[in-house]
Image 1 (tube, helix red, strand yellow):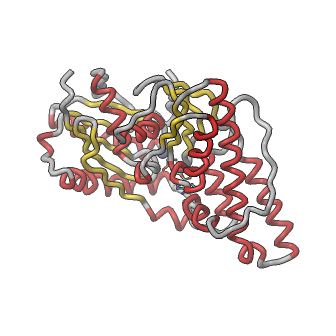
Image 2 (cartoon, helix red, strand yellow):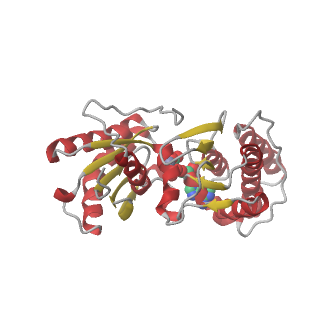
Image 3 (cartoon, helix red, strand yellow):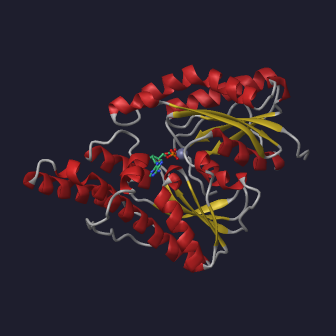
Amino acid sequence: MNEKVKILAIESSCDDTSAAIIEDGKVMSNVVSSQILHKQYGGVVPEVASRAHLVNIIPVVDEALRNANTDIEEIGVISFTRGPGLMGSLLVGVSFAKALALSLKIPMIEVNHMQGHISAIYSEENKPTFPFLCLTVSGGHTQIVLVSDFIDSKVIGETIDDAAGEAFDKIGKLLGLDYPAGPIIDKLAKDGNPRFAFPTPVVKNFDFSFSGLKTSVLYFLKKEIELNQDFVKENLNDICASVQNKIIAILIEKFQKAIKLYNVKSIAIAGGVSANSRLREEIKLLGAKMGCEVFIPKFEYCTDNAAMIGIASYHKYLNQDFVDQNIEPMSRYPLSK
Ligand code: KG4
Ligand code: ZN
């Protein structure tokens, strides 16, 4: 297979419309249009998201081509996120890719969004040694994945209820913070003292649970607000630091157990929550403690973006793993084969 190819990658699984140009496996451009209009609703509204994708997709693709100095005729392959995600959002990206592939007479590659998040790690020259363990933490998923090569992986543990990003967002909502609350909590926690204690959930094997934490924060706030109406305002930094610490402690504890059992030489984090400054620090400490090399995606490739989809699709391209026009999006799309 000729390794030289320009891929146009599309990501539209949730509330970010993104396009990227990947040339021979390298990211030439990556444009992300984040839909800020969901803020007013305190979370992503699926119908609003799909309509916004429809408006954004052509300008975003145009800009990605322009930034990469690439003419549309030079594109040899189109790749897209097939799932998991919101059906209405996925449909926009998948339909756009199918139409463009048909008109340009070029092949298509479908990508699992969670595989995309892991592939963000491969944007750097230095690549992990296979197999490695990846802690993928996003708004919809929290998984420990045993990655055996560029396209094969197996989920060995995942959340049984809320995802880690969802915990940040839902607890942020209780604190009156805007959606998505993860980056805001990250910022506020920097000036906070993690002095409030929350319980650690007991979950079997390498699975996680975050809904109990959300409930315990809810009751804790109720009790404190009864005593002092201004409790949240007066202690916001400390509450954020305490919540962030707890979420990260839960993640790190399970990940450490998995590293011990699987005895890997490389570990990684990926997904929106891997943008968290504290998690990025903690994973380095864990790597040092366990004798593993640590891989962390570039900050801009942590939250949803098409560059990661493009990188994943390049490896599928090398295997000639194409799909035809009958391909359909899948709102649920498990990672393990
Ligand atoms: O991967 P992503 O962009 O979308 C999904 O596939 O879900 O992840 C979005 C999630 C949101 O829950 C957001 O609050 C969280 O990532 N997030 C963060 C940070 N940046 C984004 N959580 C904690 N700290 C951050 N700095
Ligand atoms: Zn994502």
